[in-house]
Image 1 (cartoon, rainbow, N blue to C red):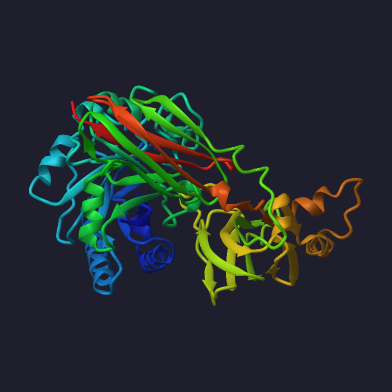
Image 2 (cartoon, rainbow, N blue to C red):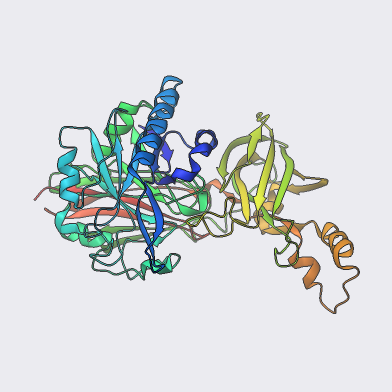
Length: 509
């Protein structure tokens, strides 16, 4: 099965339609396929000045929908899998859902209730995916009592809003304060407790750029990269989500996989993970309760490598930070140029991009070049835009001996490390002199007993600690007696704090 990545929650608004080509080109750079979710809402004011979110004028919506239709057809004809979709909210009693279609011929519907929405598309290949489910019932939190698992095979439980899995774990939903805190009454776990066969994903709820890495993405397991195969994978709940960095995950019981339904009894369970950083632990949950903890930390850290041994490692390089907008209002955007050269092999590169202006090029077996753009404010200033984006980066996987040289060039700087040094610790390389020069130009000499003004306003490159293959790869297998009516799922934690949520394997009643 191919593992194909996307952001299932990219909301483009009416006043952004002239950016549709820009959005699409960025999506094609970072996503294997893209289901666009047109956002048909706007802010309006009552006569007294109260702000309300309501549907855009019907003529605007229809015009935009045809623009989306033409774009989706064009990209599909050119070989890039793209799906039409839009956000539906109704009266708020059933929660917000993104509606997507297999074909490109459907009209947009805006009934008040979820069941009406489902019925409107009963003869159509359509899905309605709930998101930020853990908000208050009746106020756009998920109503599991009205849920139809055929129309909505999985739910988005992580996004820029935070985590809707439960109300007892970390990653609270505190970013969109106007929607209130999360509640356990509507969280994803309540849907599973209701006996629903519902998978789980993560996606951004991004309103000014698709696929912001820091807001979560999803993976679907499909037989190939065609729209039909992708659609089948989503309908069958063969999906999982990550909070940030991508992970290659397989979770099976005999011949069944995540999202499938299996007969009760003894089955051979297999877990296989290849992550972007060191795996800390894997939690096997049965009916939302920890069944088994597979601890990976401590299994690799003390391993020694011979001087001539060929090893594989992964490390992340991030670019950003820089001048504070309070002091430098015209320094909100920074462009970077650089390259990576390895005395050995450059095996893979993962893009950890959050906004526009990124480019990876001239990739060879031992080198690559890049052009990056970082922002000290939202790229559009849109009212639903993300919080300040301060970094962009890559995860590099390289192969060599412990003393093989890795050369990172960033603007006018050239940094050399051995693989052994990269595995020792993380480090920061700042463009410190440039910060001093900038301060001298704008403020003159800044005298102080600390270097805060220079350091705080310096552009920085962070090279995270490299970890060997034994750290970021985990394979686990055991026989498990799967109980009738239960569900079994995974939660994967990396040492850097990244998380993956894997759709359950459901057991027949």
